[in-house]
Length: 247
Image 1 (cartoon, rainbow, N blue to C red):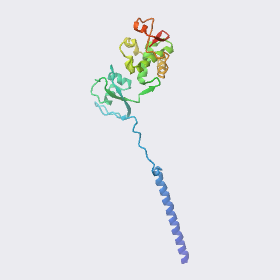
Image 2: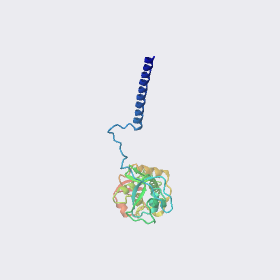
Image 3: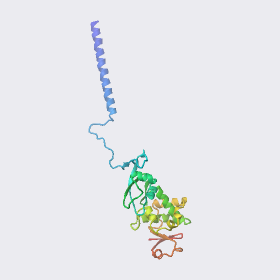
Image 4: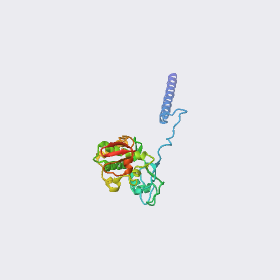
């Protein structure tokens, strides 16, 4: 009986040790899983330091700071700019633009660098970066200058405006090109501010996609209506509808 009791006790001890070993192995496996399975010598990479900076506007003029962070870029003030035009370009109110830059007045100077939202601008294959508001302005000018012209002529007007933005002879911003002194009659007579039709909007997007029926023209005019000797003296690239496109 004693021998049988000893044998049963040894068996129980053996089973206990085996159970403990299995439990320890199970716990070890669980700890390895929680650790993400990083093996010895493996590096955990830090976030990319070149990522676009994120700036959260601070409180300004009694207005609460925006809760949502924005990706931003820097805009350098050009001649003729105002807070109103810059704010409109990037889809902001003047107060939002001032708060974003901690400005206490509406005065800005040429060359001043302002923080503006990056999320509102897009790069286009034609080689320019515009906001949605600027695309609408491009369509407005196409509508004002070329409504009633063939569709390809509307695209051509858009292409000339883009060519000017890319040329060192002209301002490098859309607003600078559109509002350059005596450059476009619709600015002077107010037709620029008319709502563009869908044809003008499509033409603007096609020109931004890189379509240029003019082959690089920088000027266009109606030779039947214009008596400008300078325009008539320019080398002709192509005539589309009632417009002559020149270099």
